[in-house]
Image (cartoon, rainbow, N blue to C red; front, side):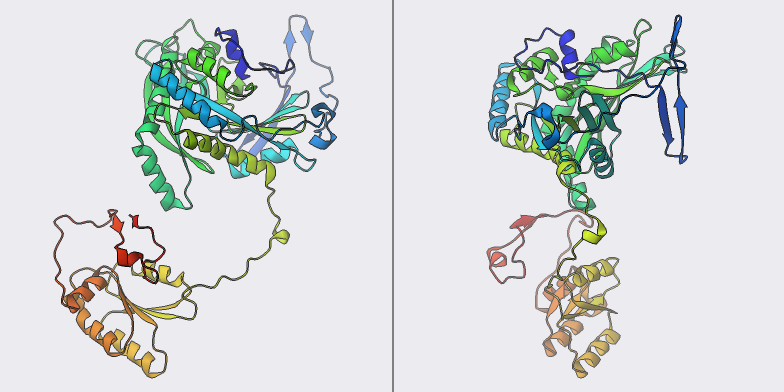
Length: 519
């Protein structure tokens, strides 16, 4: 279902130049379906014939002439014309400024503007290869590879359900009522480098009021769409700001449902949501007109939908997002950003580029074969050749601390605190293997419970550098004449802001290279 399908229902003044051959809708009546059940690790083929009145497909050939993919350089339809993007760098920000003016005037509450990025395809990168790469790198609820004919293909990994309808026998309205559900997505942040950074970014996303407002308005419009055709009181938000994670992005998602009134069916539900506020804006008609006036090219299939219409009255569709449109040997990736009055123009342009990056990477970056992999040269680490003794004060995080120390390249030996640890270090000194540093671990209790002053006197006597963590640092403070207090509120497991003093920022400081402030 193409984006321009909505113009058949909304009075929009067209201002974009359009390809006269572009289609608004393409339906397939499949005569052979390969079904793959991933949970059971099985598959089977269903072959169909169709009859209508006195006519039937039985006995007719089911084959067609092959139409192989043509790369850019071998495709006469493109006439050698190519541009890398439809919106020059920086122009998108000016469109955001115009949107903010509309928000200020009260003409719009939000708007979704997009831009298109393009790459030439060679014969080694047909649509089937793009699909395999996307499926591997960016798995999503709605993955698809569709040959549209006429040298056009769609390859997608869409994260967002558009409209799903199914009959539910047991419900509070009537037997077999059709349940309609949607999952508006709005609110985006880039993935971190690991799970811990992901968690920090999820926290920042959930705490971001602008991102919350985006999703709230999207869901409010979605509820309004359902209220046109659903039973009174049946439209409900059943999931709020749920987190969904993809290869490069983290999104917040709402989940909305309703039950259709008896005079409406799945196609009515589909059409009354056309198109989702998450790809247009609000109020929807004015937002669609704004999109038409501000974007630099027609959307074609972007922002429309792909899916299944069932003979049993069901429907399951996903929005055409995170999709590569291949036409005449050229791959197009379109990506948008949801704009509000609080939007930062440069950040919104960057968001479109980030969203497009996973698709563009699937186009331009091949997976390296093992035999082509070049091993990196060994990296010299700060701890190479160093030996560290880690004294364990019966803490639960000693081995994690030891792991961090080993990542510097140092050789680390962990010893339980007490006279035996000091005796072992003395033996190393006597044998000419004096450690380069002794790290005093965290631990429960107070420094006197582990006789830390004795340990520190030993290190002073033998001129061995020491580094204290938590209890170890407390022991150093106490040993050198400082006083310890007790916090009024325990802070175990809670992040604490850290700020470096001026001396801590100096070159040569052990804190050199750290941010001035961090948690």
